[in-house]
Image (cartoon, rainbow, N blue to C red):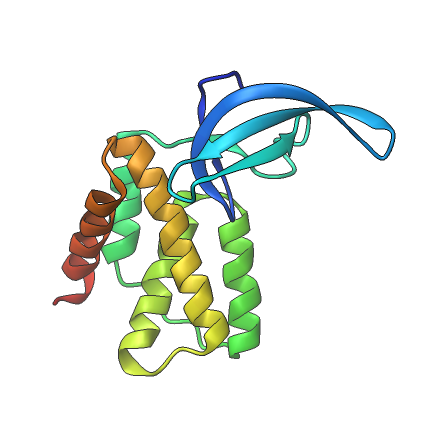
Length: 163
């Protein structure tokens, strides 16, 4: 499904480049793996070949989808009135889906909540991780460095929430 050199997105880890396809043996069974380098995390991830759909792997988005993501970050949605534990599960599902729009909504909603009350540890971690994963994709799509991606995200968020 993917080839060496492809820029892909792996939910929960971020965007990176397939650097190799290697055969490895674990528990007596040989399996092909994508070796993906995630530059913003300075790490390599091995992904079993054939599990792309199950893991929601996808090619990085194009500039049109990036524009949709920006709109999702700045468009106010109806606030969820659910218990924080239920909200956490719902947001985790959105992040794991690999959909950049859903991820942007999680960032938007947690940022909005943080402006009125203090986030709990789990929500703070989720927001931080979602931002880092989004930034990793911004780096790849816009071909900018991590600092510029942070600045870009901050500017988009200011459009939606003010300074």
